Structure formats: structure tokens, C-alpha cells
Length: 267
Image (cartoon, rainbow, N blue to C red):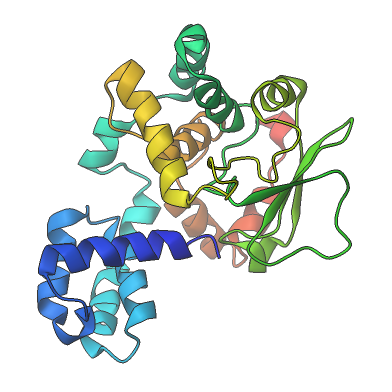
């Protein structure tokens, strides 16, 4: 699944930091290393990796339970952490950045900026993305697809919330199609592939995007910030999530139902 490579990377770093292969045998030391390396909000993913790898370790489960309320409070506050503030780039600035440095970027850098700005930004779901000329009769687990036709589209089949949303078809707009056609040879098997013909690892995608910002903007930011910036732009002016939930609770229905009761033209 989409998070597997992320979990592998986290565990690898924690093993290097602690000098211990079996992190479940040194839970307190592993947690200390985790807190030293990751921000509080990012420890949610790190603990998920530890819990999945060492389900028998009670200390990791206890830590998840301990931090759960704080994570929930952080989510509902919708306020950035100090680390996120330093990395934040507004959506309008991202688009300006893409266009301003277009001629100075390499073809792959242009493609990545196009992938994350011409459609609503996804996670690291552009790899592995298999190129096909028609939709397969059966979609393969672990793969997403770029259907290269006259009117091309993506099929997101393997991503974090697939169990909830199912397969997602996303049409490729002309400007993005132009970048794909200019960068990806017709004989490539994957949208992003290395010299040996293998799909990129998620870590390579993440690091390559981060290097674009570092090279041209001297900023330490990446894929996650595309998503924060896009959501911040397009949900501007709406009530905070906590306020929506409170209103919904007072009316004895769910947040989605509460939002559907709004008459937008009368606001």
C-alpha cells in the first residue's frame, strides 16, 4: 500500500539512530529516538510504523493511546505547528514559483511541478504508476495507472484511503498532458521510472520534489505542503472543523449533514 515505503524508511532511520535492529526490544530508546528525529505531528506516522512492525510491544500501543487526544486536538485546531509554519508556501506562491522558474527547471522537475499543481495534489501516489493505453479489465493491487489515450486520465487504485473512497478517475488537463508527453517516452512502462526501467520508490519522489524547492527557493518543504497549501486556499473563509462539529452536535446530526443544510446563495 501507499504508506509501506514510508514505514520502511522510518524504521530504517530509527534503527540507525538507536543501533538496534529489533526496535521492539528497546521501546523506550526507540521512542526517544523518534521524538528526537520527528515533530510531534509526524510521530503519528512513526508510531503507526512501529505498531505495525511490532504489534506485540505494549509500550508502543500505550504511547499511541497517550498521544491520541493531543493529535486529535491538533487536528481540530487546524493550526500549523512551528515546523509547518517554517515550511509553508501559499498556493498562489507555489503557482508563481512553478511559472517563474519553468525555463530553469529540468524536464523531470517541470513534470513533477505540473503533476502537483494542475490537478488537486495527491500524496506520493504517482509511483508506482503504470502506463497503459486502455483501462485494464482487472486493476492490480499496489499500482496506480496513467491511461494514455487521446483524453488521458489517471486511475488511483492503490492509495491510503482507497478502502473508503475506492478507485478514483482523474482526467488529465491539457497543460499536464503536454508536460507528460514532453518528458515521458512512449516506450516507458511507468510514469516515473529509473534508468533500469523500474518505478521510482516513494522516497525518490518525495526527495526530488523537496530538492526543487531547496534549489530554487532555499526552502525545506515538499509534497505534504502542496496538500496543506491547496486545502488552505480552497477552504479559506470556512468555519474551523471544531466549530462545524460543535454546531452539528448541537443540532444532533453529523458534520456533513450540517454543511448540506447551508444555503450558500443566502450567506
